[in-house]
Length: 462
Figure 1 (cartoon, one colour):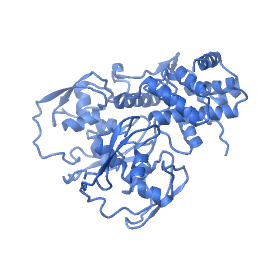
Figure 2 (cartoon, helix red, strand yellow):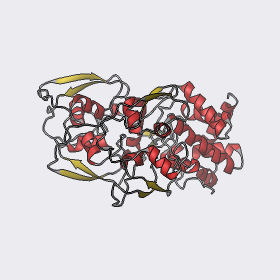
Figure 3 (cartoon, one colour):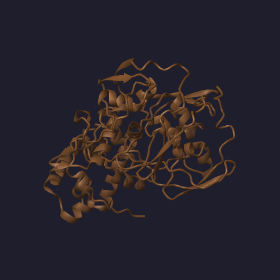
Figure 4 (spheres, helix red, strand yellow):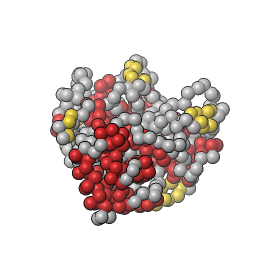
């Protein structure tokens, strides 16, 4: 089946981008299983854009290994949009298991490993691996990292504390730019409360148009029986790699809104490594204040600006770019040398000239995976979301553009397709920058010609 270039003209999103990127904002949504089948019966599920086996397993109280076995999936648990999966009935002990102390294994991460694939290989769950290794919400792992792989059933119970019944709730329909932490701030609740009320996955991903139940303040299950610190007490915290406002609120037993208001953060609640924050004690938040708007937030908190080369990008695009940049900085990225090696090896494995792939990666980002542009171009290969979905279709699995390996796969897959469908190499390179449809319709713009010349010169280096 042939694939044309994306119907969205990549030119407008990529042509005038920051030196840090052309990439796409990660907007992978986890769809819930519809239907009323009882827990004792298998269910049929049609794969939608953004689905992964680990997310489906989490939402249906089953495991990656069970779905893989039931549907005869390959070792990487690859699924395609439109594919019908049989979801096995969850084991009766799943919800009450207390985490038998079974044996564990150790695994050293290699190129291509993902937490979901490892869960499948070792017959455990992504949640078990994430909790056993204190991974972040995106479950990102690095080549060479040693992981503890818990035995099946070893995942600890989330909590034995009964949830406090919510007295009132709000309904919210997700719009562009919404995040769970921003909604928690707006409604005066916590990210944890929203995640649990809507059965969101560990990354708290939401999608435009999704209807959320927003629990009332106080509806979040109590973390412990310790008495709250008096409202007059505050803590000081210096931001380190991996910190987010929602995680700090969880750690200190307060709310994202309280931290945002105490530190005059903007609506995206962005923080920087080295920044000193005042953490108000539980209950120290003052009277409800109107949620800050994008225009009222301090521009000093913006990691990515909204203009480049004289063009101003839409607020929703810039908000997504800032969120993606914050995530990359918080989780950490491989070194430039590691990314260059990953680009070269991925290109070889996918049948693309490694010199071409490395030259494009260097021209796009300098092998800096933390690069994000105002156009929301992400990572080493600077891929925008619409092109990322195209790349996912090309390789037959959903790609996470924040993940270093997936980002490189996306860029190399696009290069491979452009080389195959372009009359010559110069046109293929131009199409990566300007968009294939744009090149066919308008020819190469002057800045595109400079881009092509730079890439061809860099190819001689690699």
